[in-house]
Length: 68
Image (cartoon, rainbow, N blue to C red):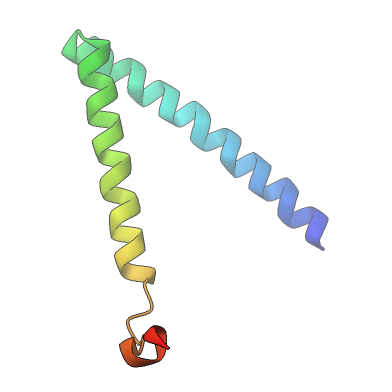
């Protein structure tokens, strides 16, 4: 069962990689600058990971227990 999970994970990762490449190519053609494309891609990834971190963060942390 776990092998199927890893196979599906590899397929999804491959699809995401090719999709990202296609988006970056189109964005570079639109902007005419690979530097601007890289900056926009980096900021979009940063915002996505920041939102994911905020959504998945455990806010029930007791500060007093953490200090001990």
